[in-house]
Image (cartoon, rainbow, N blue to C red; front, side):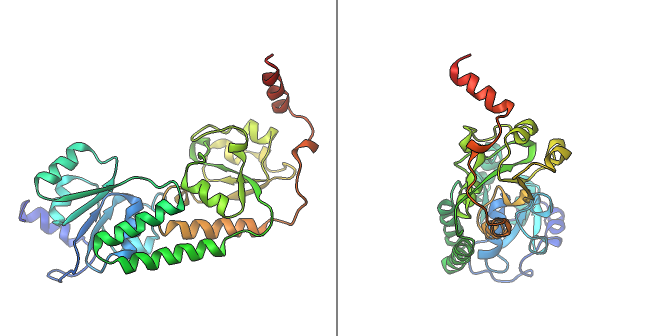
Length: 295
């Protein structure tokens, strides 16, 4: 397309992953600007098709890809200039792509396809299939779908569910209509936050955890309260770490998330069903009863 100065195109091509220069690629070439689609495309695209991933995938603290997988590809900051220098057929982005960026790419004849987040496993599997169809390899999509379904089958729980609170970065909890909540249910956990009327991004305070602890506290953040000494000796509560990189994306991330949740679930001791009616009253219980009475 010769859209940019040769010097800029050469500089970006020098750091690009994928196929060698001049190599024929069967399907459309793609640049991904979405960290969640990065990981899926890395598995369903043929060598040379995925020209670059988002810069988020190069950051081990935020990437949904394994470092060795991300290292195979170039990355962009998402600017129009960087994308055009790579000369892709298609740009895959999130639904939050800036309108100006979309318009500029369209003006230069680049197709832009956007994907939103997924709130269930089924939605994520549909996204895998859609991306595989986009790059022209539906069989690769079905192989990834089979791997995800196999991981979920292996992680299926035996026995009663265990109440768990997922304490995310910022001290918030996930909503029930989120992929990670779907994964918790599928691996044998019931929602502590939903049982207490909490919604997406509601704040879970240290005081509430201490006064009314869950059976399992999954800590996926580094807030000060999430490492407080008061959490060390709460009777009947198990603390476990949960990698923040497993919270937000679907596709192959589901496999690692399901494996981690199954590992936690299977490590819990066999226990008699806990009844919250046997707990000693707490200040939180008292405050709730006061609210119910309208005092």
